[in-house]
Length: 422
Image (tube, rainbow, N blue to C red; front, side, top):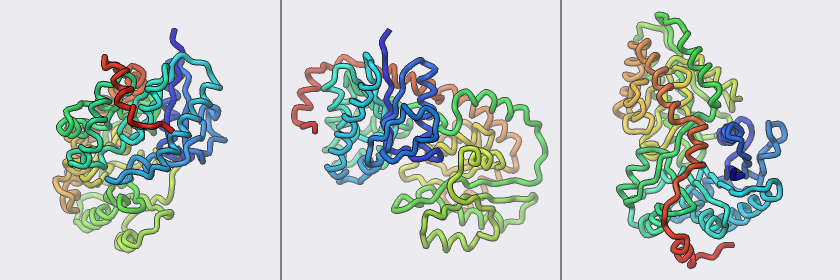
């Protein structure tokens, strides 16, 4: 039997409250279930002292994934690419010193085409390494533009026929856009919940199903999205949230309504601070970063989850909060034409706002509340449907069984002869 080592390339781990750290913890559990060795080559400053399986988390990467994968049309600094190359090689050598293996599978969730170039060069020079790279940062690029086509079309077509490298995309929307632009169809990677390991799902479903229906006269409307720094800091609709809350709570409602939102003291933005002044007396704020348990408790206390993310890149990007909400039996409201909005319409687990105007979101929220028992049941059904193909075991299987094709290794090496690998 082949001794395979599964290696996650994860430059975005942080502490236990970090989203991507849990990604690797769940991948490790899936590897354990498959009796497969697992290692995470993670961010160099990751605090791994007090977590389970410390020995499999190897802090090697200096830079986060977005410093290479999301740097606009001009791309990342060459120094950062060279650093990633050196640290990747060093990390693999470290793993080889720890365990003997017949095969190494490299998997990068927060990957990009720039990462794929580096990783594929390494893989083609190695007899027993193959790779699966999820193009997490691709939605931030205009794949139909001439500049993108000139830079990437040949490489994408090469990867579409690769023996040892498999590229995946995050959503069916991204898949369609890329296929139309390049003629190459990459598979959509499963999208499991980082919050909930697979083994918790049956119990969670049972708890939701056993909850007795009741006529509600009070509703907690939750806005769990966050605000960030820089140009993408407001893409999750944090300022739109303020207008929605003001619009909703200024209505004459036949029921009691509480709005809950998150507040982030570590992000200082004048536009956000002035906007929050309008609603601070109307809203229950949950401050700062949350532990996993605190986050789940906040979600459980809600009745409706609002994700007012703008179309932009979110027309082709996922949201973990959508998955968390339906897993807990919570209906969702989001914008039509986003990834979340498309899933809501497919699964009937909430209502979409037709425009990004506060009035449209308020009407969608009221539609859910007025038919709450129906949408609550639909959220539970949606969770069951989603989990079937988007669990950690299915992700593990998709990586391990990534399809190899008959394109010759000789041709691939000729293609890469123009590159030098540091």
